[in-house]
Amino acid sequence: MPAPHPLSQWAETSLQPLIKLIRYQLWAQILLALALGLVVGTWLSPEGGRAVSPELAYSLAEWIKLPGTLFLNLIQMVVIPLVISSIVLGVSSGSEGDALQRLGIRIAPYFVLTTTVAVTIGISLALLIQPGNYVDVDALMSSTPVAANTDTAVSARASLPQHISNLIPTNVTRAISEQSMLQLVIFSIFVGLALASIPRKRIAALRDVVEGVQEVSMKVVSWAMLLAPYAVFGLIADIAIRVGLDVLLGMSAYVGTVILGLFSLYLSYLLIIKVLAQRSVIQFAKAIRPAQLLAFSTSSSAAVMPLSLQTAQQDLQIDESTARFVIPLGATINMDGTALYQVIAAVFLAQVFGVEMELHQIILLAVTTVGASIGSPSTPGVGIVILATVLTSVGIPAEGIALILGVDRILDMCRTAVNVSGDLVACCVMQRWV
Image 1 (spheres, rainbow, N blue to C red):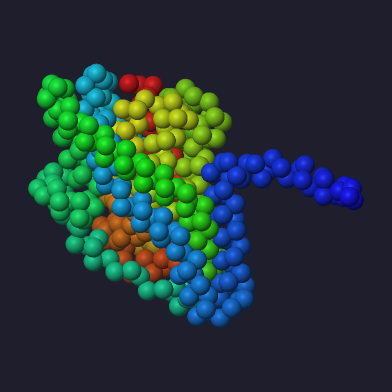
Image 2: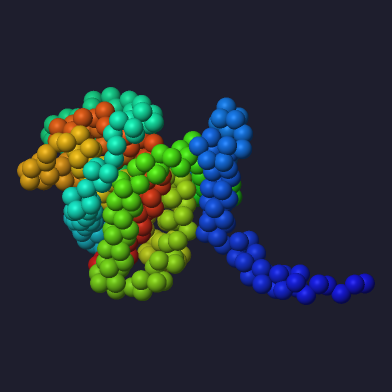
């Protein structure tokens, strides 16, 4: 029997740790799938590799994206029962009623504060870099798709009293069918508070049902997670095929400003972890890496919520009741990355169209963005719809959305990763405070 070649022995020895890492670590599988999806998508893209005809490339994209679509549909199928059961069980934990009360009092101001910080970072960078001055509007408008229908955003405008009254769902089944997550969160909190005020013996059977719903939801999620690497590959390849490199290069100043803002926001999160939560920054960054990668790949906070719950409880050692309360609530109202993106996009479009923004308009933009980002659906692409409302509130043409539509999915991935990071940061802070 011939002796093995020294080169093959070296390769086997050197690659063994990498193979073991990919085999047993979800974040490594997702990272590998992300890289492969980007390479394959660029190779097949009509704007990039031109390996196949555009018609065949777009047809292949549909099939390549299929595992990702199935993954997202599986998660969306159980996300509402998972959110409701998690919040109900978290709020109704009678033995921790005082702690839960303190948590509820602190979490809302904390979310508003971090969203305000995100908006401040976004406006500051947009005014400093002025990405709108680097864009050839006529050339870019001719190469970008038509803006998505923004009637939803326009029709969603209402007075502040109407928004406040709409927080209470008059019809729970309608809220479920419309996936109005903020209404469902409010409903779940009321149900949890009611259960906490009733003797345990009288509601033991109902608690068992709610716990069973949560267990079933988590089981379906565990099945869906088996598809996660294939879903990431399909979703990234599909984006690379459809977007191409030309659109990204034409909007590089805008894209760079948003990514710089999101990175600055992430650094502020790490500062919060160090100062307020008093935890190791390196350990926290390592622990949340799988959730960040999945969020980046799926562009959906709701899809990552089960993994965020697991990360919070197992890796960050957050109390179960705190994690059950903060993670679903954060996935619904804590949209710091989305808020930062919206203000940069608004200022960018104002610069493109030559709209001079005075100080009071900038303040109005900040307040409108904070309000619009709270309660926005945690699904891919919703930022564009909400942005239409923000633009019209400060007198910027909503038609400008067509300029940024081509690169929105890439930025949607980045801001979702930051949104999920913010939820886990909030868990750590609340764990120490409460």
